[in-house]
Structures are given as C-alpha cells and as structure tokens.
Amino acid sequence: KNNMSSKIQIVRTISDLRSKISYWRKNRLSIGLVPTMGALHDGHFSLVKRSINTTDKTVVTLFVNPKQFGQNDDLTIYPRDEVGDIAALDAQGVDLLFIPSLEEMYPTDFATEISVPVIGDVMEGVFRPGFFVGVATVVAKLLIQSLPDKAFFGEKDLQQLYVIKKMVIDLDMPVEIIGCPIIRELDGLAFSSRNVYLSADERARAVELYKVLNEIAESAMNGEQIPILVEKAEKRLIGSGFTKIDYLAVCNTHNFKEIDYLEAPTYALGAVWLGETRLIDNIQIC
Ligand code: PAF
Image (cartoon, rainbow, N blue to C red; front, side, top):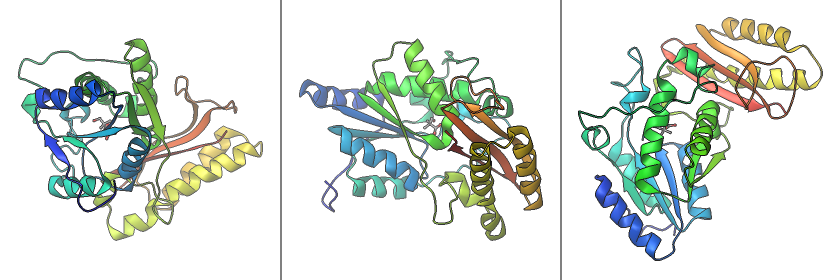
C-alpha cells in the first residue's frame, strides 16, 4: 500500500471517526490505532508500520493533549506540523487520521479523570505531576472512541506504556496494547519530537544519555553494584554538560520502583535536562 496514489481520509469529529470504523468492523476488518501528538518522526512511523503490517485498517490520531502538560511544560511551544504529518502518514499508507479539536475532546464541562496509582506515582509521576492522569484519560477516550483491536505505543515512554497496559487490564478494555522498540538516530539518540529544541551543541552532547544507560546495563550485567554505577553515570552526565538529572535509575516494569539487583525484566531509565530541553531514554538490562 506504500504508493503515491494512497489517499488518507481525515476526520475531525468522534461521530465521523466512529462511522468510518464501524463500517470496517461490519466488514470484519481488524483495526489498529496509533495515538500521537503529531510532530511525527521515525519513531512514530515504526508504530504505523507495525500497525499496517498486523491489522487490516490503521487509524492514527493527532491531538496535542493539554491535560498531560504541567504548568511549566512546553504546551504552547510544542512542535506542530499538521500539513507535514498528513503528507507523511498518507505516504505511509495510513487509512484514517483523526484530528479532533480541543472542544471535541474536552467540552467545557468535561470532568472525568483516570489515574493509575503506584506505577504512575514514581519516576515520571514525581517529576511531571498530572502527566499520567492526562495520558491515561486521553488514551482511554481514544480507545473508547475507536475500539481498536490493537493499539501501538513506543517503548521510549516505557512507564507510559505500562501505565496504559495497567489501565486497559483494570478497566477490562478489549484491546491489545503493543509496545514497539525505540528508534534511534545514527549516533544512538532516541527519536523524540522534542529533539528539535536542542541547539547544535546540545544535540552533539545529547547522545551521552544513551551511552551512560548502555554502560549501566553492561556493568550491571557484569555484576557491578547498581547504586555505584548510577552515581558514576550521573557524574559523567553532569561532566558532559547536562544541566539537571531528574532521575537515573534501574527499575523493573512491575511497579517502576528503583531496584539494586537484577531481575528480568529490568531497565536502566533516565530523564535529564540539557538546558531547557528534557530528554528521556531507557534500555533493557535483562
Ligand atoms: O506518547 C504520546 O505521544 C502521548 O503521550 C499519547 C500516548 C499520544 C497521549 O497523548
């Protein structure tokens, strides 16, 4: 389907979204959903490809969700490129693109919030209060609006992926949540819509995050003590010009609590600042 003649359909209301999808469903076609906030890059396109390869119809959503941005976050400057995103998704062979307005998603009297405590209370939950409530609420809405068979999320936002998995289990949502591997630039920096904020100098330094996560993973596998490794890695990041470390930790994916022993599945995770830009990344240790 990857040809120039593909013509993506765009809907902006929940009722149009539902009528398109219910027509496919009546014809026994399976539906894949890829929720995004736009400013699409190769990481998003890998989710789209996975959906196209494993379901009959792929629906992408593009909505910059204000509820997952804190007061001091970058909502107003978050990169937006609707025209470019539409062209790129069309070229990928996406069947349907849902671009709701703010009012369509959150009418003025909107009140409901979904929170996923424990797993959502640590790491990102500490440094971005309200973030996971915003994510869980919007993802629940998108899943209920489109009722897909599968929904695809990147492992770069690892904790987000597990918060969503937990919500789907707890609320008996009939959808399979598929985590997809991190896509990296040539030097190893994980693709992120926020990478455009980096100056040339910061961009050159940014890859150090991936390098220290790798080093933690390798040394931990060699039996070195995790707290000592993490401390060394923090020093190395600060020495490379990183301005702040929100966290650098080794965690499991059951509850994202910090651990100082290895028990699969275990990841090294970091959230660090280069000037005004916050970068997150992770790699699996075992
Ligand atoms: O990962 C993202 O881009 C967002 O958090 C998501 C899942 C699209 C919800 O707004």
